[in-house]
Amino acid sequence: MAPRKTPVVSRNPQLIRGVGKYSRSKMYHKRGLWAIKAKNGGVFPKHDPKPKAAATPVKPSKFYPADDIKMPLPNKRKAKPTKLRASITPGTVLILLAGRFMGKRVVFLKQLTSGLLLVTGPFKVNGVPLRRVNQAYVIGTSTKVDISGTNVDKFDDKYFAKAAEKKNKKGEGEFFEADKEEKSELPQDKKDDQKAVDAALLKSIEAVPDLKSYLAARFSLKAGMKPHELVF
Amino acid sequence: MGFKRYVEIGRVALINYGKDYGKLVVIVDVVDQNRALVDAPDMVRSQLNFKRLTLTDIKIDINRAPRKKNLIEAMEKSDVKGKWESSSWGRKLIVQKKRASLNDFDRFKVMLAKIKRGSLVRQELAKLKKESA
Image (cartoon, rainbow over all chains, first blue to last red; front, side, top):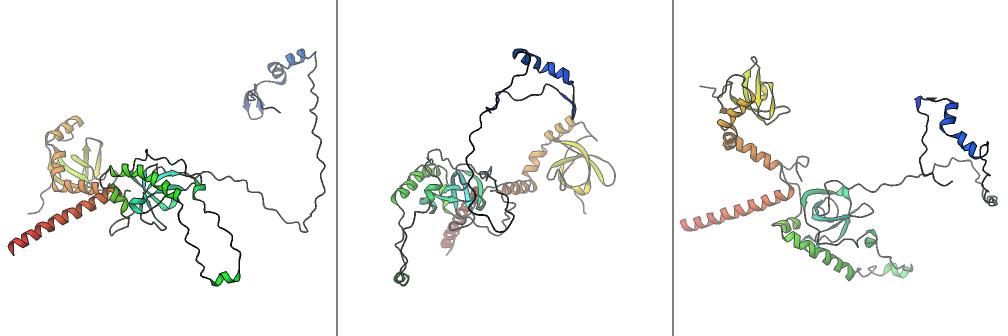
């Protein structure tokens, strides 16, 4: 059926559940059924049923399972997009809490569709390249850097996918040879992307005194620091 | 011998427990042996146990249970705020508050400043040592 243009509204207000204000005869008049009948010569209009599409012939199934086992109900859940913490906005300085760059202070660029955060050192300042990072392993500080000069539209999750490895035929001789494939070099266009993003960032970082050395230093808890009382 | 700060009408005290922790208030009347009526410009006049108050050195000149307007005038006249913020106790509290509210970047800048100050002190010391040697 084509969708209705106006929503269905009842002309019979409910007094209590199950009891309407108007009787059947009153409702007949309110709904204008007499007018519909009059238009159609004294009877209700009849519509022929729509022609049903010919049913496709059902083939007998090839396989009948031997046991009557219970099938689990299908899971129709859709994952919601990861909610970004209110303290993390583009340009926020984040402290990484785990991984190779644990303790590094890093600039947040944007949240990718997978929910991960796109982040850069900048590379020249602290050695952290354009990288994805999980929000859970990050402290958002209240220090913000101006990233209006950078364009991060071209980065998405596909950019960070691993390059498809060439399939090596498994030969016995190869197990005994030095199994060192040449270290894959970072492709030049990725290096150029890094430089492009960092160039604009570095300008806004150098505008704030001490910010560059702040980003170059690592964060660590010292004696007397209570994380639950620290303001980040 | 003994006590220098007395509970009297006009004595300024610091609240050390409860919802209004850290506020400066004026003792405006005494209810009984344990409680006082207490008031501040930004607070509703209420009674507090003396155990929740720490007396300060500051005292202002008011009548018993003055009107709010008169209280505020008297506090301005004797500059309670200024006296408090220039006293060493008041200054300590201000520094504590500032330290607690420091951002991670601020803490980094403080560290740099401390290192710089230390190096300057050591340079001067080295100079003086050389001169006296």
